[in-house]
Image 1: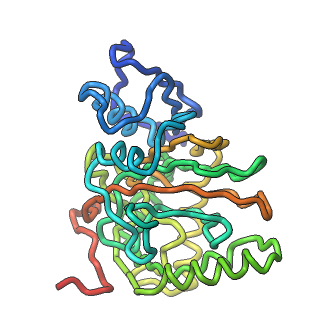
Image 2: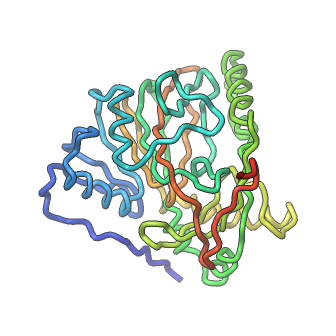
Length: 310
């Protein structure tokens, strides 16, 4: 049975807001051309950009070299209130989560950001600060299309599942190591920071998107277990569900250049930063917009397990 991907938002074809949208793949991703990112965008321009994000899941803007840290954060605040990472300190004077390859920041495993919190971020805005001459692309996957592509019996099963997500995930265990002592030391220090406080949350495996009402799979490498299942059975089920998310048909790949921006809907995507650039340095900074606890098909919301909420 062929799944039909339902687009929740109809794009306005008339370009009355000063930029062009160029889709990059059949199910996810579009490049925004002719827009200078700024925290002072006119309301009509931002409204169209917001609708484009809900439709295309991830948007890319080339050559935003005018943005410094303050400008990046001002632009990100158009989407909502910024929140720092729960465990990794931000660079001084900012709210950013920085990934510096020399300090262990190589997130080369499929994930949705910060799902170890009951209220994962709703939007992320990532800026390329330093990009290696070759490699270092990022791939995004559409988790709404992945759900739509499930066979009906698997949809019904997935809709009943709940999963526990935790931040004590070992990135290094899934990474190709280049053997350099600097990179190994960076990995150790990054992990120590990342797990300095334990966070766990329980989420529905299928959640209802807060803005569009679509159903999406909520999984990724922070998943530790499925509630009510043995580790063995859970691993098999998760492998099947993740295979649907990561099908090439559900993905888009972006080749970075310094100054590029990516904006993604964290409620309907996973992503993977490809670690194929050896000892070259790669630095990206992410501004993260706070979200809300998510709801399953049955209306049950996400729950924070650790640290316990007062």
